[in-house]
Length: 575
Image (cartoon, rainbow, N blue to C red; front, side, top):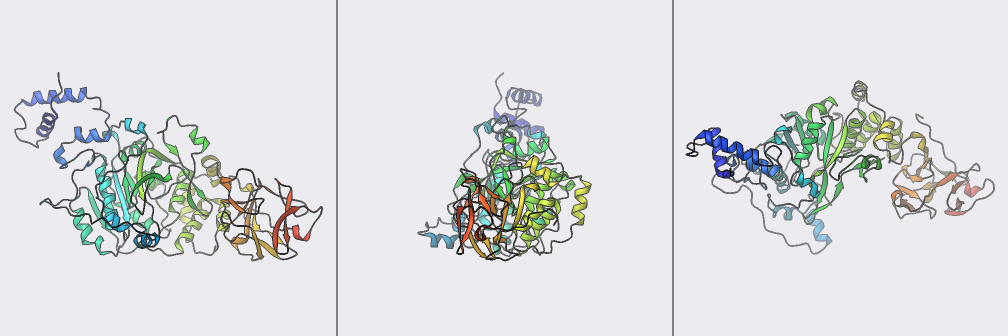
């Protein structure tokens, strides 16, 4: 039997649902039979990609103008057909860096260019071709609430973020979009925003009565959600086709996991899309900042396909999905955190140490505008170090000493810790040494015995100490009068011989007495303390020497030498 026309199928569905009178003259029993044949013969009838799910399962009248590119129909139009937002004129291209800096100053991106771009523009699909072969049983996947937190966000980037989610999310999966306004002061986020979202499906706005910060605003959004899962997104993103289904499918299989997309980039100056961004796997720097890394060997070994999930030690934090009940079981965000900073690492450590997993889904990709040159909001300066120190104190055990030594001022009030330590005991969470050895074994520190010292290297004759002046690659090691509380004069000597400035633990000291990114070294640069108190470069056999207030690498004296003697205090955990 040939397939009935799609229009006939739509009429039959409407008649069955009581949505259309006299949908067809064919008797209902015949129509139902023909519909059954149609869906049984369709190769995608039980396992459909997102586009076919919209076209073949939902009556198109549910969302006027719906297509695979606008899955929730034509957005942002009033009943008279007038759009609620109109793109502005295309601005002239900046002639020089000074003019570009003016455009970037207030928002960190070219706002006039953003204002000239359609809210519903097409995006480049950078997915692996295998992703397009995936099929999902949408009715079996958990539904989700997408949460945007914003504070003084530009209207065009916020609306484009919302439109992209509506346009590329199957209606069966997207239950709602929750906008959480963290006490914005910009006029365009009042009536203009409210007017526009009146003509968008599934969008609701929650306004906070005072500035709460990212952590508390997200917690409010998650509390407002009414679905099994939630997705956190930044307010200046655009999702790519098929972005949602892989994450929700994984959460359906593994409710104890948190999942994140590949984060690609929207250029802040041109608003062009590129597949260069944060990527899929992240570690962390010991100053507690997330850090892109290659897939670790242990994780690559268990993958059988280029589109298999990838384990990641940490997350960027601005884009991820989770099971709501599991998030609360883990304790949610730490409510003692300040406005912003390190909440992504704290949650990542807690997730892994307390029985969860963090995975990146290669078939889920989202563009993100990485700001350059300006931000439209401010946060108290002390909140980021406070959050980092809380993370170190609660989750990192003795390894927290490394974090504290990287920070110039350790004397922040980090708030009460008892309720978080009690949570850690109740969840029977593993120690941080387990995290390093099993989740992030390619960290340069995986055992506390890797740390020989994190101290000043003092020449007793001159009372001069090694000085890093920030340890930026390309700079030279210097000497300066010793200052006991100086981070720039503290160096970490690793058990394997790396000599790294505490001000930049990604840099290593070479035989040229230059700071070089450790990952870029073509040959080992190991330093060995000798019984005579020298600091000998293993590759050359020469010793670090102070000659007339200048550092040199020369032959080692047979015994103690004034210019070649360097004193330091060995590291002892807990002291």
